[in-house]
Image (cartoon, rainbow, N blue to C red):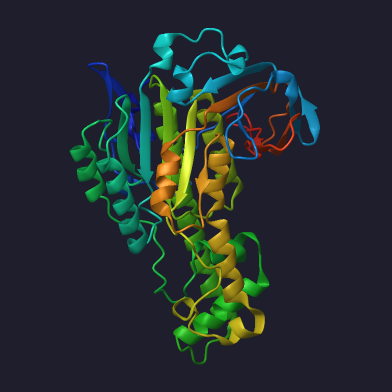
Amino acid sequence: MSLLARPKKHLRALVACLLLASGGFATVARHAQSTKDAPLAGQAPKIQVQVSELILSVVVRDSSGRAVGSLGKDQFQVLDRGKPRSIAGFHIEKRSQEDAAAADGPADQSARNDTKPAARAARRFIVILFDDRHMEETELLRARSLGTKVAGEAQEKEDAMAILSVSGLNSGFTQDRRKLLDAIAKIQPQDLYRHTGRECPDVDYYLADQIVNQRSELALQSAVQNYETCANLIGVTRAMSESMVRSVARRALEQGDQDVRVTLSIVREVVREMGTLPGERALILVSSGFLTPTAEARSLKSQIMDVAASASVTINALDARGLYSTEIDASQQGVSSTMAMLTGADSAAHRSKAVGSENVMAELAAGTGGTFFHNNNDLNGGLRLLMASPEYVYVLECPLSDVKQDGSYHPLHVNVAAKNVTIQARAGYFAAKPAGAKN
């Protein structure tokens, strides 16, 4: 069933990208319902995915950074929790039109035998997804400027591009640069789940996770200290202050969990619908990152990589922060610096958030054969780099019939019998429990 044909209750908090053929071209229909109508954390629909086969997208690069396309199945090894897993299916996908149009070489003998000239000439579909939920205003303005430059330049004749935002803006696939520029100009920061830092007690998603899930006494006491200072509390017991902070932390955790659930679900549905397109498909996620500390978030990331591998979609990511510092500055310091000076709690939290926020982008890119451009101020060059695709992507299919569906995480490691190469592959997967199973 098409995504837009499903009941609206299944579309809340999701971007519905229905790819419709129209005159040999593809367009993207706008989502059916705004994410402002998203359900509360406990009401969001949970989607269970049982995986009977693991599909891995692997990119192997030589010492010069070029993708290697001459390896065979016997040169790969997949370790699941440290144990070898059989590789039942193997082929090479050519995701670069220049390589696809070149004369057949040694690598072609390892690729699918059903490649035809028509497939080599297929259009290339590029989606640039702006994460307007998590970028600060200055970051978003810079990202818009980058997108304007790229969209305003001449594209390859076969390329089609769509501009999307996490909040729902959608240009549709087009080769009309004016439509792309108009869509980019409309992207604005969204405040639905944004932490303002002006609350008292001031508890963000990271701190809430530390207090509620990690049961960090240090995080709790730091938050209480800052609360007592910002509220200028007199005659209030420490127990009352702690109770207030815990209550705010639980509320912040629910909001943060919902934000992550919504954002990752949108990415997953965009990737899923891109799988209906012909030709080469690439998604570029432009974001400043966001934390994904929960098991549910890790499961959603695993689902995105499963869908991307099945749909032959490469996810590239650009960290809109550019070159960032992990050290806290005066403007970000809490109202009370006493606890920070004694324990370094505020500074440690800032470093953890700064580094942890980019993990989701790094994981999605590595797990789908894409590239993650980060910690670099040359964002213009970075976006152009991401517009290109790796020349060769190896697709490995591993049966999982012997894996117990217990909801556990399985770390993966891919080895290649080749010297002086680097490997891009997903770090693991979740063996999701059957629908209706008890935790």
